[in-house]
Length: 583
Image (cartoon, rainbow, N blue to C red; front, side, top):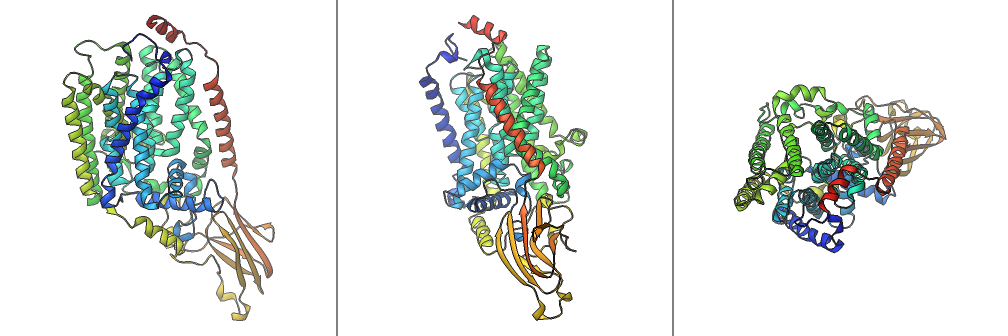
């Protein structure tokens, strides 16, 4: 909203660019303040730090092998590998690997956090400046960049993927509000809805490509906004447009989502909901027979309660504009954000357990307190609005006191280390690799039985070989993440064991003929039957039909979104009338 009656698209480009400079500086300053403890304590080594560092280092190593988009994590399971990169969204490990390729590895977590939280602040600024004038927009950006849930992720959880996914949330809901016609597009009012649908799909896909739980939260919360808009306006149009945006977003991310969904049958995906990871064990203030888990849950729960209380009070304060009723636009935005606040609060409470069990994929969010990611959006916007009112400095003091207090507690409770990444790189350089992930372990395997040190290729049935002179000669010709070649010379037929786990995407050929490998007794190692004589064994990670189809869907959707965003203005009668009145 502007003080003049001119539409925003008539403002000079330079003025719009200059308006973003303070937001960039404030978001960057807040991000640097957040990572300041890293400079003297080392990296915050939270719950998921090792997992993300492993993915970064492994992906960067595969780039050096010429593999642009890795699928198989080579050094997981002590070199036996796992299909982690098929199932885990690519944005975070691609960004981490890219940073590690150009800077010291110990600096990667710091730079990653600074980039993510600067993006988060700018995303919140984009939303707030469409609703509030002046300093309220900058305060909103600061609040979201330093929101307490982000601090919990940074200092105690180290879930870099979720941090990146959450950075897009304010922008996602701004576009959802545009689709619902709760706010107008500043750039092209007459063609705003098609463009908003296209941009919403792109941002929605970005969330899914960053973090799957964040994607599930974005899906349900966006649908709630579209449903609310349809009910409020007594029209199906917002819901239809919103569903189109969601479908296009899924299509754009199809190269990841389709293989991840189809190939779940090939791994032990149910382990993602093993004890300790169930929603029923992670509602607010839940106590289980694990003191460390219970302590963390209480910390997260207390942060959630503080967010709910302060956001609720700020919502009440912004419910009126200096003792005057809200404008139509702000009233709609206020109610939509209040809906998100209520939805996030409700789903963190135990009485909603039936919903977690019934709604598709909701249980894979795992932790109900993850809905603080949605709560943080309302937190930032409502507090930005309250700060822009009379005596707003009181809200600023209270907010930063809360954020500062939470930060001090989390820094004190966190685990700090400077040797995690160097130790990881040393284990890879030494050929040991690292432990695997339960839910990405290929079906039929028990990766807890894997040896921590194993040769790349070896004879499995040594008892059947008459003597040492009859032992086969094995030579590894090539051993890259997705391509293995082994030359064999044997007097008798035998079984060749490879340091590799069976997975349907591996194609095994012996002397040019496709063969079906068998698995081991204790773990599903790839064991290849080899005939007597000279043989050439080739194992390649091939493109399965689901990955081909997913890539095709993403490419087709990208072309359609480009057309939708670049097409001539279609005209929007509602917005056209509004703009006519303002001019």
